[in-house]
Length: 116
Image (cartoon, rainbow, N blue to C red; front, side):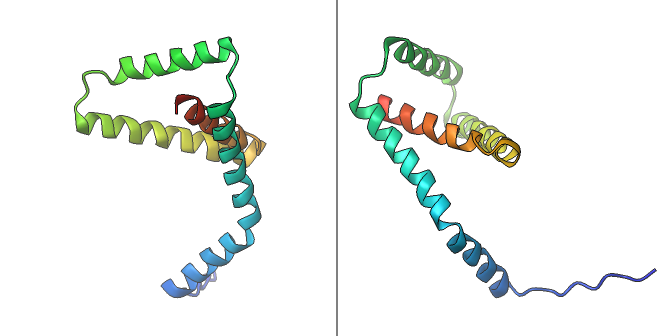
């Protein structure tokens, strides 16, 4: 049985490939940032319907209840693991459905705009 021979890439080549990929993906990145900023603007300057405001208030109250009484380390870990969970959902569902990361960007932007 023959062994596959892999060429080792240098760190410089790896980063060169990463930046090349990012450069090729810049339109997708710009689009995502545009969607996020658009929904921050919409959330901040356009009054949401009462039902959506009620849901957002419930979400914030639930988060405050979950985090009340936590010390700084517990709060940092709570935020970290929540972000990790949402990132994996976005990554997993983005690979299969593609639209989920856009919805996450819309939701996060809108929520940030309403709260601000």
